[in-house]
Length: 73
Image 1 (cartoon, rainbow, N blue to C red):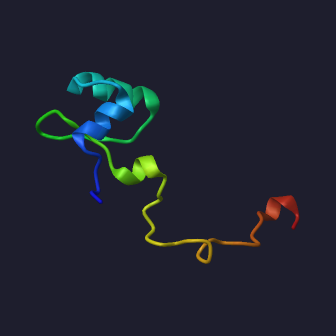
Image 2: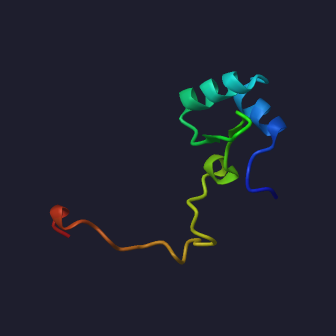
């Protein structure tokens, strides 16, 4: 699977075919993206799928049992 959304996936996500309108839509939706030298919006697949960038962290890597000292744990 590619690291970035395809042009067709961007059309589906934004509902727009025009590059400038895609950029407007992504900004309104709060989707992180950048604009490449061709003026095309580039969206990382992880931004849409909700991955944090930590490879294969899973449940075992998540912290458990921690609570802030303010709560008096």
